[in-house]
Length: 109
Image (cartoon, rainbow, N blue to C red):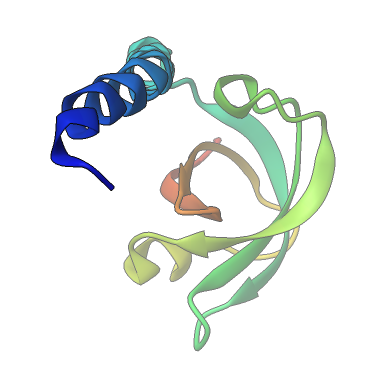
């Protein structure tokens, strides 16, 4: 390849990359500005050794997820110590690299 074509090639590649980079920044900004809200649920199972909890939950609005029953990894295992099947809870769910994390779990009295 002749070196006089190199600036043209670089300009072409840069013009293709800029829209993609702009979209990635916009998507990150949209995620960062979404309010984190607590979700209501009912404990179905607690796995203290595994640090997991199964919760039948309502809609998880910050993740646009419909109601269902699923297993979450507890961000802090100590939150699971006082929970048992049948307990009503409010909890915060985060998606960290594809894993659904129960970041905060509060028993409802």
